[in-house]
Length: 392
Ligand SMILES: CC(C)(COP(=O)(O)OP(=O)(O)OC[C@H]1O[C@@H](n2cnc3c(N)ncnc32)[C@H](O)[C@@H]1OP(=O)(O)O)[C@@H](O)C(=O)NCCC(=O)NCCS
Image (cartoon, rainbow, N blue to C red; front, side):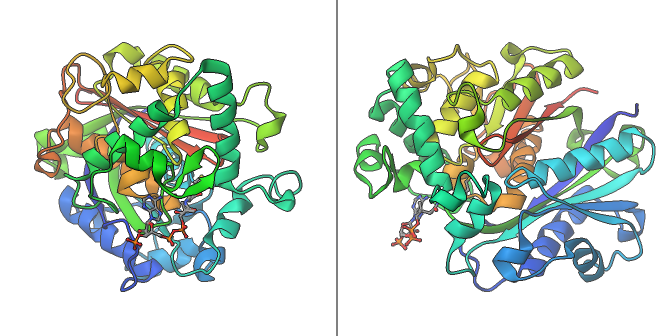
């Protein structure tokens, strides 16, 4: 299997981007990634695009052809990949597999979603749940994650203050991320008192509805220095995926994401490192409770203790003892343009690990040189993880 390197990354701002169309967003981030990687369009062998539902959000399917055409990359093979909110990381995983197998040398991976054009984004997002057993009876994603939060509070005594601390830290981190949707601080008290969405979740426990795109150039590690400077190369040591039931109620336990455990354990094994060696992580906090659950499922603290772990400040950017989690502001504050999120998470790790100027004022301590991203589809029916390293 060939080693894989990231040699360039680019993204748009996330937010309500009225002035940009679906295709423009992806091409904008793609051009940034190409320029950042110092490759030419002719160097690119293939493209993978992650998007959850161009059809529902902007009435556009056949995304692969659209993007290859609009990006001026015809006739290279372009493949659209879909796994709800994990579409972006699944596109990246597909690109990694194609390089590892020796099929392609240089691949452009993009993720995009344009969510703010539809009148009912909640209904569109709900198509990622089980239609017959969840959406049909009125369950929405905020309500499904609210059930997880309620159960978690019941089982482990998590307080509303602890849950709200997650969002407060996320907003604080996003202040220094110029691409973030929300760059304003919110106190724990403000999170608790925000408008109720689905008890116990308030508006400020939820990720927003976002437009945005992120793109990355990945290549055969043997060819990386043909394009990028040594300091701009970061290696993908593991690219893993696991599946679980699509419906929340079919799981024996709704306070853990089994697929996140399986995918991350496999990633640690593939990379030959443990969770204790990870300097920085980006986890899928579509709702604050998922941030806590993933902090546990990725092995950063014991089951049932994430509330206290977060409250003690152990995951803050300025801690130098434990992992820094979501220095970007996460989905909560940086935004969640569904198909783009998985690539944006890995892009943040790319910047963090090479201590890029893009991370100025939100740089986490890089001691061991490892980062991990966990991107979740639905309530955990799909989870992809990517484990990155500064060393090959
Ligand atoms: C939480 C949610 C329901 C709020 O939607 P809404 O009530 O329609 O909110 P609006 O769009 O009317 O925005 C109202 C205000 O709150 C802000 N806002 C909206 N969502 C926000 C969020 N998640 N966090 C912080 N602020 C938010 C808006 O910017 C706006 O501010 P303004 O008045 O200063 O302009 C919506 O963001 C949502 O559905 N989030 C979850 C998305 C989701 O399920 N993603 C998939 C996860 S699996």
